Length: 337
Image 1 (cartoon, one colour):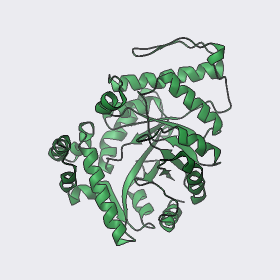
Image 2 (tube, rainbow, N blue to C red):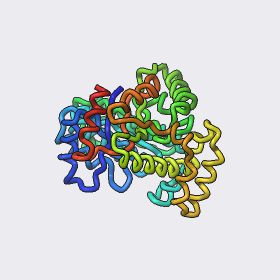
Image 3 (tube, rainbow, N blue to C red):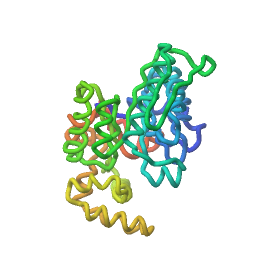
Image 4 (cartoon, one colour):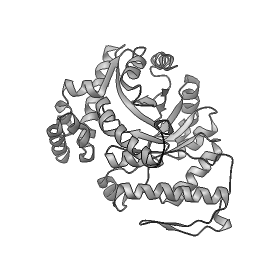
């Protein structure tokens, strides 16, 4: 099981030092999310200032960029990183697409399928000289002249990992992708009963095996070495779980455990902006399903006991910040090594 970390980058000037510290610490890979900042720009600097780490967007938004723009970004990063780049994509939910990003929300699974296939059509054109001729419901891409063709390079296979919660997106990942980002709002039971069966259905459809796809996620953990930090981490986890569960698209996770009414209550509170009341609805029983608690040194064995056979690479939900809990990170990395 590979152990990765996420990096929060609010200032691009910090990225070289963050990357070098993560590589020196011994993480297998780093992931950059697309929240308040672009996910791709930091990875250019990460590629320049690392030699071993895998570098992934975790995740970048698929529908705010055309397949062509995504194809160019990924192609250049694959070349520059010498094959270490992983293109992680997600749909985001309807409200953010329409009201924050300003793009049309339409058939997300079908559209994500076309984004993936269209990007691969560009890459095949650039690497092998095949004619660009992608025709789908959402995209018709048939023009590639020499001036706009970046040409072949030595790292043409760009792994695509998509993110999702619901069955059809899991099936799409199994059919077409090299990896799948399991949402942080998950339990071992939801992976076992919802995610994996649908991943395997997609794999069967394309004649692939379980070993042909990596499942990755961020895990809520509470390191217990420092009681003050432990209480803070538990409160943060309870708040984040409540926030995620208030999103209707993620209700399926609560439904599996019979907690659908709680998810509906959380959605109602979020709609009225009553954020401070929401963590109180996350019971200790719920918390135990979502969160692992133990010392930094104990957490790796707890992670492996819970997720071996379900996940291939993991990270903790909070980011690595050099100089904060370095001894704890080293203890955890020793357990994964």
